[in-house]
Amino acid sequence: MKDLKLQASTASYVHQELNKLIASDNTKSYRLVVSEWKEKRSIRANKAYQAWIPAIADEMALTIPEATRYIKLTFGLPILLADDYLGPLIGEGLTAKGFFQLDYNNQLLEMEMLPVTRLFDTKMHNRLRDELQRFYGNMGLILDYK
Image (cartoon, rainbow, N blue to C red; front, side, top):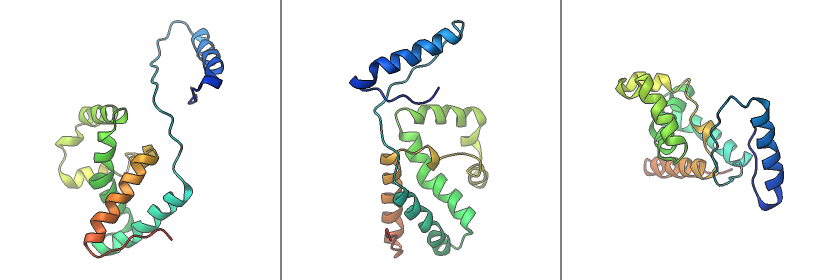
């Protein structure tokens, strides 16, 4: 089911869509999660973040894919796991897969397949960019929005 934006003006539409879902197969059970609606992050923010990865890779003497995996594991995953909704879901899945028992290098390799920043809302992505700017700024690498 697609995301539905619940507001006073859309309540009847949301109710209608939920009724359609239930009517389509009344033998199934569904999980309904209601959370505050957050707009998607801006293209400018995504472009800035993507532009920083080569600079971070150069700073750390890594390839771009290595730097991406490092950022996802070191900065992104803790942000994702701290989220009230996504954290328990992702954490349980990673635990069941044995991720936390893997050594560091294998955890890095797992970052290739694990969506991390793609799952971020605007607030989470802002936090990631702030942490990257602070961390690499302390190393003398200035990550700007251009």
